[in-house]
Image 1 (tube, one colour):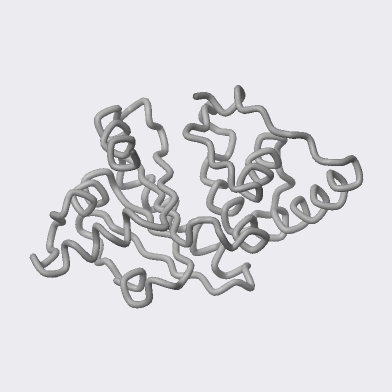
Image 2: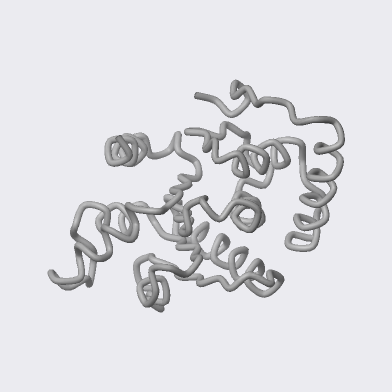
Length: 193
């Protein structure tokens, strides 16, 4: 399902301006940019707890801003998943997404844990310390996928179920550039169903 195809129930006109203005202000404070229309729509879906299965956007339209949108929406709707796992297929993009997540943490009043899972990068394991904390976990397909499948590079046999449980429950998984990794996309779909 493409994001453009998702129909949303239009809120009352007064709600649009009040909620839209509040979101736009929060988004600009966190990111330094005003939101695009798709970002406003995604926020509205998150607040309504209507999570899309896909967001089909061309490169360069700020897909990493999904982290900021989720963080703002989580304050309005605490029923949203408490962990956002941002998965990418290249290490350099993992580092860029981690930098973005760290910026959000600095600018947000909400307590937020940031962890990175990628080869040759030490996991700070903050996401494991307290499962009730709001967290953004950025990682490569192999690091996230192996943990979801009860494996995990450098993860002890006893900790594997813990990693799989935390990544597989109360978690929103965002797969960036999904067209580059259909097997992982299929895996996440299978796990979700």
